[in-house]
Structure formats: structure tokens, C-alpha cells
Image 1: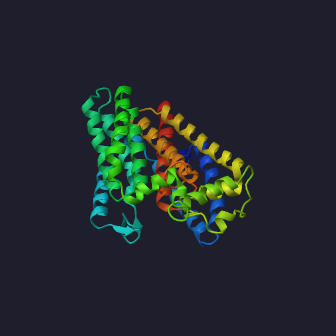
Image 2 (image 1 turned 90 degrees about the vertical axis):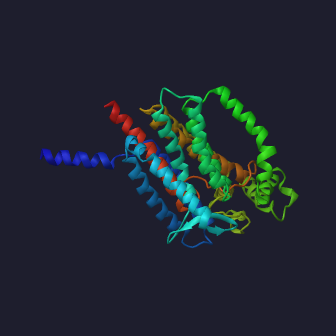
Image 3 (image 1 turned 180 degrees about the vertical axis):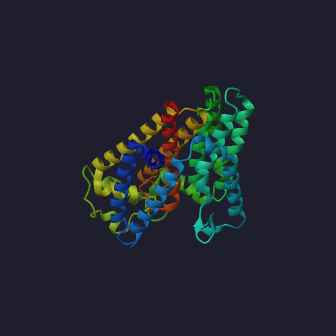
Length: 369
């Protein structure tokens, strides 16, 4: 009987690995996503069923990573990062081209290796700073900049500025939390403000410059490049206070909203549920970020704290950039709304991030006990 009890306790410790607060918040956001996807995807049979399958896969990934202690995950930092870089090089050499971008590898099914770098890059950086804890010098931050720049450069060349921006946000968060001085940070910001208009802008592709110019003035080409932004902002504004009601969004069902099941699903949600619905959704994301910050702040090791902080930044950047581009205040860069937009690759990445957060929280409790 005693052996049976010990056996059950061992199994239970690997099953009950989920942080209750995070799980509830994710369940609520996913529910909002499925309800909205049903409306947005009426003309796309099978989207809801496919998304439910993606959620199950993401859940399994989350459970697996939640069972991996941070110390174990840290050992795989170099192999995971190296494998990701190798895949990005393979994409550059013989990747699939879709809509003018070379971002996918065909391994029986198309995969997008840049997605894994959202986790692999901060993982590598967190490992690097953990090894040098207490003895950081300027050269260590230079090495970290190189570790970050390699995947960002390969991803930006595809071109995929949206994913590159997310990798930068996650990686830079690790560098900042590791102890980057405010003086150096301010110097980097000033340098960026100088470099972007003089160096980065001329290097952008024509369609990327058009996206920025269209954001500043959508009416410069209202029936062409500005059409999608104009229609999405109309959808957001036409929802009013309470929205038009579920399944009653005219912009979505008359097919004015582009990519309405993926990148622009927030426009569908806004039109049907209005300002009140948006307030609820933003509150859920806010509580998710707060909970993740609490887990990061209480992490038992530097590696855990850096990884939790970078995952938190990924969630924040996903939500902020997507809502910003749909609302017309940021350029369109192809970033999905986390746990809302249709798609498997992004959900798997988010599931990995959630699993890491839950692993950090779970191991904090184990350390304390």
C-alpha cells in the first residue's frame, strides 16, 4: 500500500505541473479565440477543428516543457541554438518561397525554423549569462550581441521583420535583465535612432518601406496598399461600445478584413464585441503578463529569471504589436495575436514558452520545500 502511494505521488508530481493562474488565463483567452475564429472562419471550413488540434499539440508541448527542470533545459541551450541556426542557414540555401519570402523548409510538411529561435536565442543568452554570473564585463555583452545578431540577421534576410523583431525583444530582455547598465542602454537607444533612418531604411525592401509609409498615411493608396489597414481600422471602430454581436460583423463576413482568421483576427473580435470586449481581452493579457512577471521575479536562479523574463516579453510583444498593427498605429509585420490567431507553429512556440514559465514556478516551489 505504501509503495502504491509513493508511486501515485510520483505520477501526480509529473501530471500536476500547471500553474493554476496561468492555466485559467490561457483557457479564457483561447476560448475568446475559438469563438472569434468560428465567426471569422465561416468561409474556411475546418479552421476551428484544425485550431483545436493545434491547441492539443500545444498543450502537450507545454506539459513536456513544464516537466523539464530549468537546470536540465540549460544543458541543451547550445545544441538547440546551434540546430536552430543550422535550420536558418538551410532555409537561406534551399528553403521554400511563399509570397516572395523564403521562410519555410519542406520536411514532409512546411516548417518555419525562425519560430523556434524565439525560444532558442534567449535560452542561449540565459545560459551564457548564467555561466558568467557575478563576473560580467563589457566583452560579455559584446558576445551576447553577436549571439543575438546572428539569428536576427538570418531571419531579417528571409525577409521576416516581424519574427526578427520578436527575437530581438526576447533576446534584448535577457541582456537587460542580466545587468546591462542604463548608460549603455541609453547609448544604444540613441545609436538606434541615428542608424534606423540613415542605415536601416535604405536597406529595407520596397514593400517594407511601403508598410511604414502606409501606416503613416493609409489614404496615400486607399484602394491598394492602404486598403487592408483602412478596413481593419473601420472594423475596430465600427464595433462601438458593445459591438455588433457574435457572427454579425459586416467587415469580416463581407470579406473586407484581410487574413481575418490569422493576423487580423483582433479586427473581427473588435467589430463583434466592441470596446467592452476589447477591454476584457486586454485585461486578460495584462493579467497574463503580470503573472509571468511575478514568476520571473521569484525565480530561484539567474537562468530561470532570465528565461521567464524573456518569455514574458514574447507574450507582451506578440499582443502589443498585433493590436497596434490592426489598429493602424504600427506597420503590418505579420505577427499573430497570441492564443487567438489561427496557426500551429506560433501556438507551439507559445506552448513552449508557457511550459518554461510553469517549470520555473514549479521548481521554485520545489527549492523552497
